[in-house]
Amino acid sequence: MNDVLKAIEKRSSTRGYKAERPTKEEMDCLLRAGLQAPTAANRQEIHISVLDGSDPVLAEIEAERTKGMVPPHNFYYEAPVVMILSGDAGFHWSAVDAGIAVENICLAAEGLGLGSLIIGCIRDAMSGEKKAHFAEALKFPAGYEYQVAVAVGYKAVTKEPHTYDMEKNVSWI
View 1 (cartoon, rainbow, N blue to C red):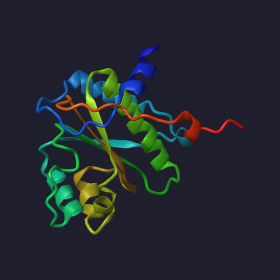
View 2 (view 1 turned 180 degrees about the vertical axis):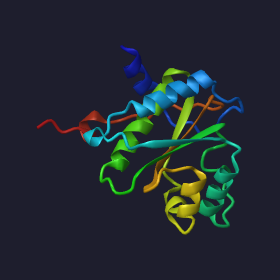
View 3 (view 1 turned 135 degrees about the vertical axis):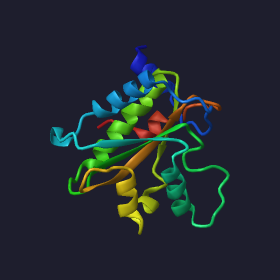
């Protein structure tokens, strides 16, 4: 089995990270993987904002997301790096393109021995009353909006990949 298929087979969401940050070389690999993802009409409109897990804007997003709740973990499970992907708000396919990019990042992370977690739970916080503030703080290009996020780092916990039922989930026509 080739390396890509092994990464797909092994990858699962990581919800616990070591404090150690991925190296510059590892981060460059992840960013290249995301930016090399195909985009509709080759628009290449996805922008990636990279934050250290201790960045105060992440705490602001968490506060907006939880509004008084006290969850056991923040939305990125204390990962040392969070990437927030934005896309052209006026382009119909930005969400799909960001999804493809984030999956490339996650598969590259798995191939490098890193963990990852695709994050959608901050959508309401990112599109709410502080939308413009977050867009500015995250240096989104003009006219761009949040699409998806991903946490990455060295795994402190592991879990088995999901199982699937080929008979249930596939129809051969």
